[in-house]
Image (spheres, rainbow over the protein chains, first blue to last red):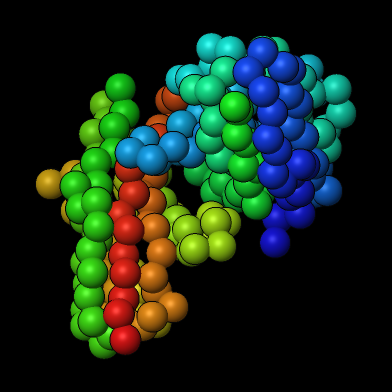
Length: 114
Length: 116
């Protein structure tokens, strides 16, 4: 158990509304990631963070923003949700500073945009 | 650019059969890391194994074994004497030492169904 929680676990929203997903970790990991999982695509990186206020884009970052004001929290925001953002969202932490370290995942958030 | 291919979308076996899940990767880096994750029907992602590019030794853990071959860019996963509890989606993933953030690139996953 890597001490990762995600909230909410399930959410239904309407197109055009803003949505914020929260990832919380208890073990002071520096690196945190947001992925989305869609059928036929596996998991794809949205954004990641390498420290407080330090973030960078992944391969599918359009329509998403992130913030990290505290080590333990990494927020993913959909400024104006679209149906194409219906997905399962996973947060992950990297278990250490070395690039070889394993990423461990939170339980996921299932988002439905109507 | 890094890429992972899991050509087997779905595999169905009968309990106690052996099954191999294929994973082929592409990378330009000489230093990289390969992973397998399991996603059971409950939805969480469970880490199974990590291999670095300098270590081509095969690994066995109980009924699980992994065959890493740099010559064919493959990192295959075999389950011996499969059980119903092995039913899950299995993902192979790659990270490169030179890629910022050491992000993971995942294959599309293989849905394994083990029937009683």
